[in-house]
Length: 272
Length: 273
Image (cartoon, rainbow over the protein chains, first blue to last red):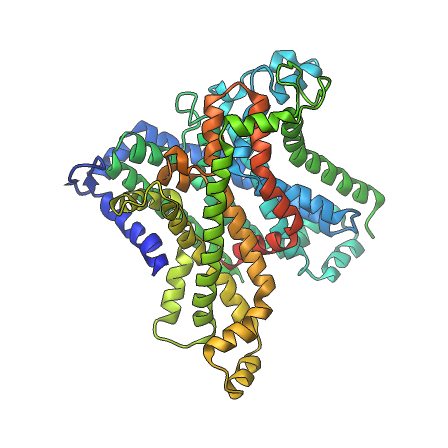
């Protein structure tokens, strides 16, 4: 009941809302699919959706690659301090997103920032800049925060997956004279097919839903350089009271998330 | 088998990324205790360690009230989530009823629906029943959002308990209620602990729901209090860091103490989807 009222009803309601023009106060007006039409013509919206694609390598590709390397390093040899490493490497996943944003805003800060002072210390004073205020570099800078936050998730998924791979497969590669690269491409990656797909779904959803970090570092700026759909939904629904448009964008986002997840999972199911 | 070079490479990789994970956290912690007027940068603590920064930030940012709100909300979400998840999962896991698999599929779908989308009608719905800016308004949506995973997680536990155990109890004349309470729940303690850790950390960290539904300052939870604090004292990095460290501390402590449960929950949570 609680679940139905607070998850399912809103889901239907958002679809209904997306067909109205509503300012949140007065009576809404039926406009059919006009809100969707308006979104297609809106550069802010198209921009924010394109930014999801630009953030995607930072939220999905990099974390999965890093996670894979670390999972191999944690699993294939007897590592001293395994628990220590695992605890530390997973820590960024746990930290409150606003705290993460505050920490990284300081790292990227113009004068007192950790990154710029490190660069100056290395004699690279010429490269320093206000990272989050730079039109070209703000997006990769915010994206890198996403990588820092996310890489622990694929890592722990892969660690649990590698345990299921029969050790004989690794031994076979070694007997054939293969090394680390052969092991990874011939045994680890095929053996982790399912986990990699799951990690791709989970991290892609994070990329689609990206809100907290952007809101608390750049608020989508400078200009709209780091604007994302969730931020645009928030702005339209609660700041400028274009609720219908916000709902329409919400429907688009939900469809993208559901569609992407179901597609990846179906492909994996078929592969098994 | 595995060469020395590979072993060294593995350690190197682990050290590099452990540093990558830790440096921002340690940097912020150093910053938090630095002399406020200091213009030092990096990890320079030459001005001495100033623990009073925590006290100042706590008072200036009114974090006491925010911690109170967070404790109320997280406490309520964790306890009601545990009760509802257990009861629903008990039904899904041990009973036969019409529409069971359909309802379960519906429930699982909830895990894929982004809260960033449903927050719009949620806000206007809660406003219509005057629940915005109340604790209950913050609690209910988070309980509901957590139910998908909670029911999934506890159902997996109930399915994993041997059927003979239930039958033996039933033969002994135990009622359904008694089977749940005296037979299953004692066995479920580790599963419930994992669920509690996940729910606690998730609720403590949640930002969007309190931002939209609890925007008035006397209902702020800690992430929101920090977000507003930072906006007001932009350039006072030291005090902002002190506030951030205090806010992250409970979560980090719970995580480090129960990390096995937490990571196990994340892994099986992701793998089910």
